[in-house]
Every structure is written in structure tokens, then in C-alpha cells.
Image 1 (cartoon, one colour):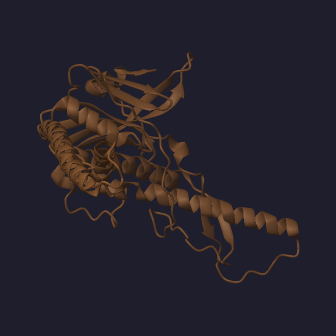
Image 2 (spheres, helix red, strand yellow):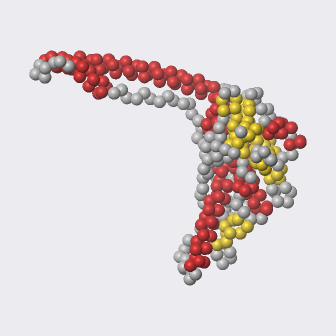
Image 3 (cartoon, one colour):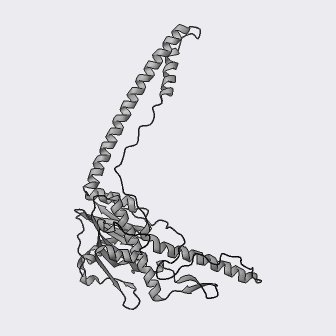
Length: 355
């Protein structure tokens, strides 16, 4: 199965230990790894997760060392539960659709301060006992302050109108899928993402996204559970189980990136995404990437998805127009795509340079 796409002219992608960058002329996309979300869950994925680890009364063991070890084990179990919950919930992240920007309202005019200034000037040199003249001076001060306030408000409204006009032009460029505008918008959107991502180009109403996901180390080797007697255990996952969770991790990051792109770029109707991971560091200290997944998705294919009920790998398969990945026959381990059969993917990876 071939995976076809075109990188927009002038696009250059770079990668570093902190993330990826895509540039179009003077505009540069910066992506940094941010903090992830944690939580607890039950029944996620092919393995049952336990959200309660013996919450009832617990008899204190006679041996203090054994009690300390048990407490440490429980803490580790809670940490693992949070990690597995995050893995199975990545694709459920919600992103509010971007709306037309509105210029900030003008700040209230400081009329009282203006009036005090005018009164000080108007009353200067007038005797405190000359009430008639002081009354006339205050009236002149009031008129002067009102005039100054009117001029200030008029200037502020003109400035706000100019800002709004620029925002409207920027919004129109975003709706029209101007490549530089879409790239800059998605740069800002992806800046705090857990998995580094970048927009690599726009062709018509389709955007090309590049995503870097963690390796298998992103999935813990052990899973909290309970013995038949109800005792806490941290059993080691077999290769098939761990591979299944890793596929959820990759699919979850890909779907979250796609959902955010569609939310932030309203003129985009489809997206191609290329997912990579680092598999080694070469002799010069430069990370080397391999492609593990590529696909094309339409915005409308995400409409009606039951995000809370469906798992990430299922959604990925059901919503893709094209989907390319390679798994081991026995364990389902996600392997690198053979780029000898995918010259365009090979060309894309060749454009990624480390800085």
C-alpha cells in the first residue's frame, strides 16, 4: 500500500532533543515536550486495571520493614495505574474550536484623574474665598476634562478598530488555508503538547503533520493487579500485552494531534500524519528516526465518534481513509515501516535534520 503526499515548497523540518521545528520562510514552528495528564481508570485496554487497591481496613504488619515495602509497592501501583490511564485516554483530549478573534475592549477612560488635573490648573492663583471665580474655574475644568476624555476615547476606538481589522485579515487567511498562517497557528497550538508535533505543509485544504512519539519505553513493563487472595501484585506484562498498550499510546498521540489541528485550523478538511520514533543515536550523537505509522484523515470522519467508549487503535482504524503501519504477526509489536516501498515517506524523513 502506497502513502502519497507532497511537502509544500520551502518547508524544512528540523528535530532536536526538545522537539521538532517546521519553517516556511521566516516563520518557525517550535514544539516542546510538556507535562502529561494523570488519573485512574478501570477496564481500559485488553488488561483490567484496578482503581482500588484494598481500600478497606488493613491490619498493620508486625514487621516494620515488611510494612514499608508494602507501602512502597502500593505507591508504585498507583503510579502505574496513572500511567496506563493516561495511555488509554490520550485520544480523548478535548480541543475547543477556534473562533474569530476579537480585539480587546478599550480600557475605561480615567475621567476623574483628568478632571483633577484640569481643576488644579484652572484654580491656580484663585483665592479660596473667591467662590464665584472658583465655581467658574471648576466649570471650565469640567468642560476641558470632558473634551480630553472624548479625544482619548476616539483615539482608543480608532486603534481598536485597526487591531480588529488586522485580526479579521488574519482570520480570513486562516480560513483560506494560507500556508504561513496555518503553520503559525498550529505552531502555537502544538507548543505545549506532550508529544512533539509540527505542521510540514499545506496543499489546498489538506495539512501534513509530523509527530514524534516515545518508544516502547513509554509503556511500563509491569501492571498492577490482584491475586486470587486479593493481595496486590505487580505482574510483568508479556510482549503481546505491552505491544497492545504501545499501539494505544501511538494511536492516542496521533488522534490528539489530529483533533487539535482540526480545531485550530477551521479551513482544513483533511490531514495526513506521519508518526516517527527515535530508535537509536548515531556515532555523532544525532538521534535517528524511523516511521511507524502514516495515515490520511478527513475532518468529517471524526464527527460522531464515541470518544469516551472507543479505544484509540479502534478509532484510528475506523476513521482513516488511508492507514499504513507494520506489526509483528505473533505479538502485534509495532515495527518500522519499510521505506524502500515508500519513497515519499523516505524523502520526508530525509528532510528532518537535528539542531
